[in-house]
Length: 436
Image (cartoon, rainbow, N blue to C red):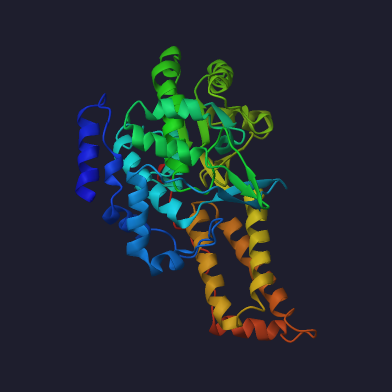
C-alpha cells in the first residue's frame, strides 16, 4: 500500500495541476486493516459503543462487510458522539467521537489526501503534518525574531474554526486536486453525519468535528488555499517591508517590519476570512509592537513591551547576561493553570482506583510529558513551578485516601527518595542565535 501512496505523491509533485480521478478503490481490505492497526486502543467508543478491541474480535469479517458497503456506495458514517471538555476560560470545547468503523475509513481517506496535498502545502504550516511539530514552529519564530527586522506581531485567533468551516468552500478546495466523485461523496457524508448529544440527533451544515481523524488534514487543506497561498501570492506582493507567517493548525502569528503594513494586513485578513465564512476572535486578536527595536525603545522610555501567546507559551522581550536582546518564553499562565488543574483532577480520581505504587509510575510519565513539551530554553522557572505544585497536590491526595492523615511529610519525603520523580529538564535549546 505504501508504494501506491508514494506513486500518488510522485504524480502530485511532478504535475501541480494533476487532478486525481480514481482514488476510492484504494480503500481495500488490506489497506483498511493497516489503518485499523494505527488506531489508538484506549480511546472512547462512538455512539454504537463498539471499542477497538470489540471490533478486532471479528476483524476480517467486519472489514469485508465494510469494503462491500463502500463499493456498493451503501456505507453511511454514524453521527459522532459529542462530549465537552472544559477550556481555561471557563467555556467548553465540543469534541466529536466517531465510531470505530468510521475512524478506520477516516484514517484511510486521511492517508490518501496526505499523499496528494502534502507536496502542495507550504513551509509556513506546521500543524498535523508528518515530520513537523510545535517545536519546529517555535524554533522558526525564534530565529525570525532574532535575525529579521521584526518590529510588529499580528497575533490572530480564528473564532471556533473547526465548527465554522464552510462545506461548500472546503469541497471546492478539495476539487483543486481530487475529482474522484466516490471519494468526495464519502467526505461529504462524513461532514454531514451529524452529532448525537444527550440522546438527541443534531444536523450539521458547517464545520468538521474536532476529534475526527480526518479533521486536521481537511483543516490544513482549507487554510492552505484560504490563508497560506493568499498570503504568499497576494499579500506579500503588496508589502515593502519584511513579513513572515507561521501557522500551526488554526493558530498563527504574522511578523512585520512596518506598523502600517501590520495594521493594513489585519483589515485585509478580516475581509478574506469573512469571504469564507470565518471570523477573527475579537478579544484575542491584536497588533503589538515587538522585537529588538521596540525593546530598545522601551528600555530608553522605561516601559515594558507587550507580550503574545503562541502554542502554549508567552513570548516576551528579554535580555541576555550581556544585556543584549533575546526572545524570552515561558509557559503561558493560562496553560499553566489548566495543566495544574488537570493534574489535580487526575490525582483526585486515581488515588482510590489503584495502588500508590501503580499511579506513581503514571504520574512520573505525566511529568516527563510536560517537560518534553514545555522544556524550552529559558522556561526552567515554570517547569520547577509545575513540579512543585503537582508534587504538593500528590501529597494532599495521598492523605485523603482515609479519614485520618496517614502520611506525614517526612514519610512522603522518604517515599520520594526511594521512588524519585523526574526533575525538570530543558529538552529544546533555542538560544543558539541569542548572541547574534
